[in-house]
Length: 346
Image 1 (tube, rainbow, N blue to C red):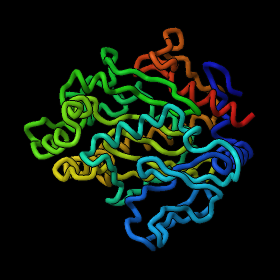
Image 2 (cartoon, one colour; image 1 turned 180 degrees about the vertical axis):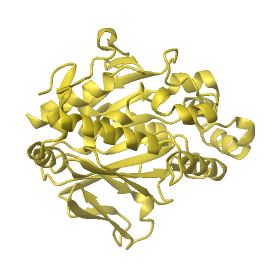
Image 3 (cartoon, helix red, strand yellow; image 1 turned 45 degrees about the vertical axis):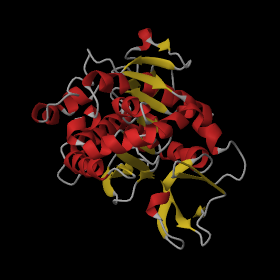
């Protein structure tokens, strides 16, 4: 059902497979639950769920952050993960080289701290959760699926996802994947990732240089990551998404704006950009939602029976870190997700 360059459509539609995914992936591995900035004071608590099971993210009286309802909880840069399994790999092992993704976000704050405290929007789609996971790190679709927004919002990153882009795609450990957008950001200039310039953000630039010295220029030029942390956390440069499966053909996606501690003028821009792209009247997420549901109808019809994932297969290579990599428009990331899926579902 899972081959090197294609997967069978029933993997998105079979209720028995979905039930087994819950058992082997969602109830056995590490899953993102929330961020410690959402519960700033002792006694604060918020209700969340890992797939269908309710849990509570809370800050105890001694200030420590925990998750009630799971066997283990751990965090990285405030991103809190939980696992129902009492034994197994720790969070560090689960993340592997993807820990660098969180480091990359944190160093965009003058204090090294990230916040996810401005509320979450929820979008429900009639599609299998894996279609969302695959889409988050697909660099081929934006130029045509999101063609309308690119046509009216032209900026320094217009060519990020076309054939001339210098961005890449790569497979990390444990099913985590990344679109390597930093080369394109470097080419476009400092703060291009937020459609701004240093002259427009003088306070932020000064605070970053005070905190990091000359390294600040590289951090600001490189920008934030574009990475999917399997199975449910998507760090989309200036936004953070959480994927929550509800049924074999129904998924809720939550989204919030990335906020950086001690970066007020930048945070305002991050929030406005988020609302413009994935807010209730946003131009971006509506496109993706339509495609999720069209794809779900396609796999349900089983015509064709298999989904092809061969784009760029012949030009994969090993990057300097030993990871499989390719062009940003290649399906390196989708193939990596399915390789990991096959391993954990075996």
